[in-house]
Length: 585
Image (cartoon, rainbow, N blue to C red; front, side, top):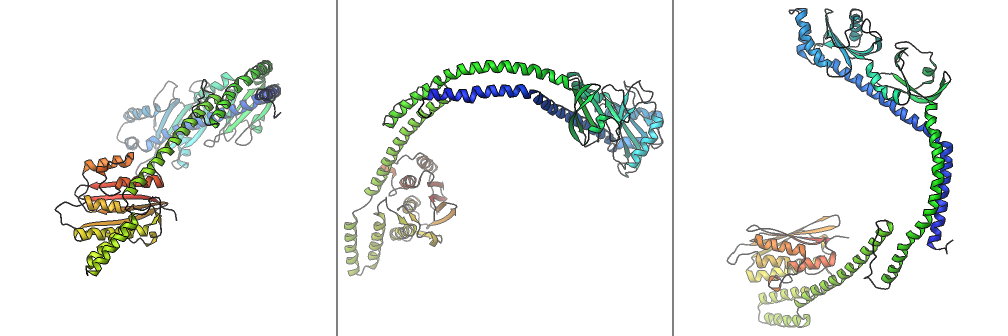
């Protein structure tokens, strides 16, 4: 098997991993499709039942919201308690409030309001008005009072002397004075049973389904034929089997098997039972089984033919790519894969081309970086003086000054020797921050000989950093920039140089601040552009020894592009140089 060609391996793979599974899948589908239909239908019906229950709960919740409106309408409450107006006048004014509430929710038949004197207020709508209000009002008032201001929900009742065969369900609530909370009336919100009919219409028409709704006391709220409305059916077999809050079962009724699904509302306690004829479900399943068997045979034949063609088509670009890889392995990076498709082979070819381009780019970057390193080293070397000659000459001059009792000159020469001893270290070498600080103090000492103690250096307590290794000459050029450019020609003011640091994770940051004349905006913008672009300055611009830009370049070459210098300055207010280094103890 391992020695077979890729084409043969693909053909074998297609046969065992595609054709055989298709045949097996077709057989299993043929045997089990009816079970799948039942399961999916049960799931759909269950979701539909829950949807009906939730929508009905929302509708009842809206009715409860409508019943709360009089609790916050103080004009309506004042009208209920008003004894001075005639009943006819109060009825007319009350109708305007009832009309607003009646139009809030579609399907609401009527809204009835009763005051404590048993006066009734309502608006006649297309569905008619109850004629049993006198009998109902006392019962509603009593139930509302007992509820203590909460809403009471009454399940389906037949509306007496309204229209033949009409049913409604009702929400009632006590109306209480907004300020005293004393009962001043009762509100009843009626909804027609057509609300439920609209919710279940799609199920009844599309799937020949039957719907039965019962309340907590097993009274029928709704059934599809509307033959048992308001009846108590505790002995019904469907009710007995529908135990718990949700589930499904199969039940035979009058010689017909039904798939029954039920769900109970947590809000009202109503239980909805849906039943769908099994033969209606299996009719589609049998048709699908026959079609599946025919399609399986066709697909197997077609897959066998296509697998052979694909095995050759898929391996052709791979072979071409392998030949190009061998050329690249031998050093020929100028090869290119001709991408003709956007499939996996085409994308692999594009990635191969991108890889070669990236390799050539990286090789070029390596050459460029190495060249920049050599230039930086050469620039630093050009600023060095032969150490043996320098040390011997300075020592001779110092000894002569001491012999002539010129102590100040001897100290200046000794400081200059220390300064050049540090400056002539190789730029590839490593010094400690303690040596950098010592070199910086020596440099300020020499500068103050020239400028008569015009510069003061303040180093934050940095004992913990004294042994931390860094590349040499990273602080002195920054301070030299302050000495050369931070003072006016005729100015005699003292310039303070403060150096502080902070450590954040693996980042060490130095802040070198001075109170000099600052940097002009145009030159500051130029320096920012040079720091961002990495363009090497011209010789006339390198007036600060190795220079700020050269220090930034050496830091980036040695530590990486994430490190280096940043500048912030305001003309007339001084300059801040931020130096960032990696910190790894």
